[in-house]
Amino acid sequence: MIKLDQIDRMILRVLQADGRLSNSDLAQRIGISAPACWKRLKRLEADCIVRYHAELDSKALGLNLFAFLSIMLDDHSEETMTGFEKAVSEMPGVIACHNVSGKYDYLLQIIVRDMEDFHALSMRQIRMLGCIKEMHTHFSIREIKRSGRLPV
Image 1 (spheres, rainbow, N blue to C red):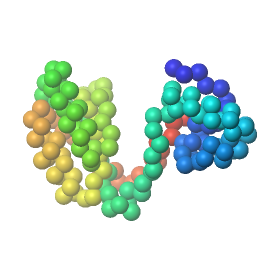
Image 2: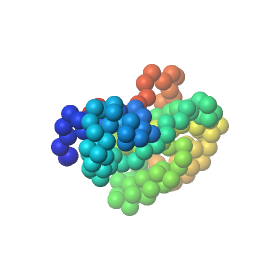
Image 3: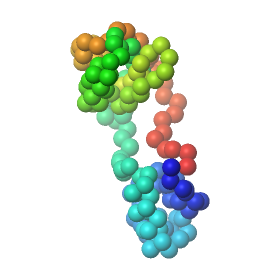
């Protein structure tokens, strides 16, 4: 685990809100010199900043159906689990996949245009992997909160 001071945490909070800031603007917001900010930022990029990205509006892109899919595999061999994980990692509609505790083995977050696309993804791609024992779906009625920001 990386050791962070208050300035490092401030840099990370500001960047999570706006990753397009120039070093000069970032330094000004934090209240430190640009060279000091650049040095800290390079260390943070090496140790804990994975990448920068744009957050897109799913509705504007026509992605209107958000679902959670719980999956139980029919076998828990390393080969089956690795194959399942690789396959779902390559499916664009699956935006997150977690190996979870409890009754199910995996929890997938899915975003697609509509029910037809959901059916194609869940029944024609995921179920056809051949290692699925059980699937259970929860559809999102309304999104209350979505954030990719970590509490630093």
